[in-house]
Image 1: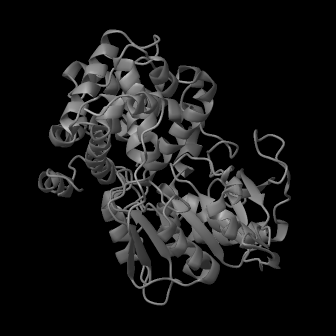
Image 2: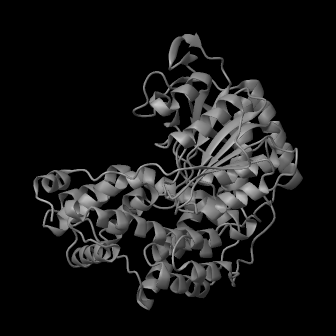
Image 3: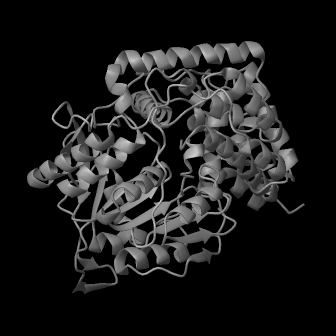
Length: 541
């Protein structure tokens, strides 16, 4: 599931496509190689971590973290079947609970331990999470909890993975054909094979140990190192998946868990089918964006209907294919910038403004949004390497490109916006050199797990809503809170006070609504920028 990351008239066809079992599955899928030894390895690593704790101090090697943030490390085994073998040092950050009620400075708030966060990915860093305590929506939680972030194994400062030289990672300007030719497909297959070989060459046999099951195990070691008997955890996007694995593996170690933008944990969907579902959902979200732009045609001048806005976008694609903007922004970079609008609707004004000014002859805003940033290449390459390793290791993938070609050619007929870009992001998994896991069956029975909270936006494209429904079915006693008719990817602590009320009530008081609850959508963004000011000065048409 790309995190970077079906409500449409094409739903019936999409559901038919997504229910098909992919043929040509990988033959080298194996059960968890750690087995019982892995369970013992986690217990031993957690015991050691609890005894040692985390020596928190200044975050001297993490830029832009203020003095109030503390950093440290916790050691986890590379291979839980060999807990005395090679160790990885996971980077951890923390801001202590303020114990001050933001609405009553005289009231001292009792502490509730650590709230651990993972932002998803796979491959995203959580080291900057503790800074959310400065945001008004998080101040009550920051009063009661130590806010804890960390880099999972392979990410950032936690034994970082790499699959290619970061200097070559950004390839642009680049094409992004909606219906690629056979020659282009052969080129991308060759590139995927080379990338998979690079991952193996640069990481060696250790590559097999970067997967979701180990991320869940690492989380239990972190819990112990923090001195917590039971874990309070907030996982977003991919973080919901290994959080759900944690709940399955260690239900008695759970205090409270929040799953924000839940990934579908059905073992049969990890990860090939989930990526098909994601590509389908982005088409609906792409239309949501175009409808918004069309409603503000007076501001942006990109067309008064979603179809007209699409024609404006395609006109920009064609122009960039002929002459990349600033020599750096081609169709692929344009698509990447507008894919972000599928994740977060607060990006809508800047994307619409950039497209509008580009078509009027000024490419500066589009270049600023879409051009690769060389200074970010190392971080981006690392995130992509972890994403690829975890998803490829987690489960079986089709090893015959004809399967990918068949499924995605069909899907692209009705969902062209993201389909092939998602294929190229995941295609190294067809040629992956490491053995695969069999995805565990995420499931808890009555009384096994404390009540948990699932948050979901109904039109989330990166984590389609069926994932929240499936997770809700699998975790007995969970409660699902839905933001209706909204699609922002990750809604905890965002602009919706109803959602935040449920989040706070659960984390601060342990109380949940009935089995399901719904919130009205947050307000859509208002158009902003020079175009809005110019439109305000023009008479209405």
